[in-house]
Image (tube, rainbow, N blue to C red; front, side):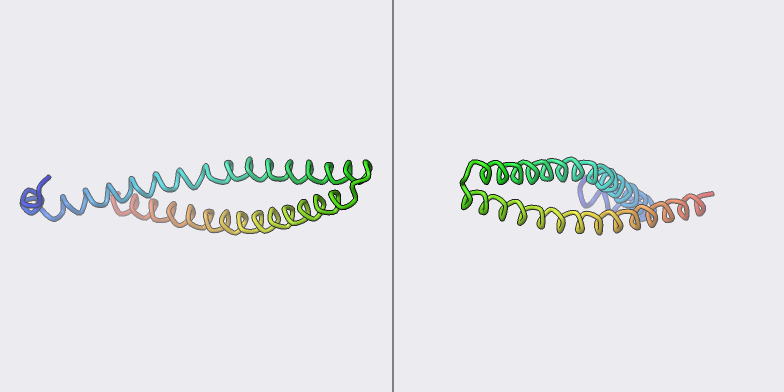
Length: 117
């Protein structure tokens, strides 16, 4: 649609089109946000499994006799576990924000539905 054609349209029709495209964008964004925690949960589980494997490797290295290697591996496992804890905290904060956003969007949708009725 050219700019001249858009200028010929009534402003109410343009506002409706803009509102619809904004609504579509918000719905798509919300759908992405809803699936995001599930993907993050799988990622967190994978990282947790890696930390467990690193800890087991450190124990095995210590049994075999490589104390230095065991110490380095244990330190790396502890550091990774600490990072995972930080990640879990941030993910929790984002989930709280997402819940608030979902509630806000639901309220707005209810208000718009009330205005149309």
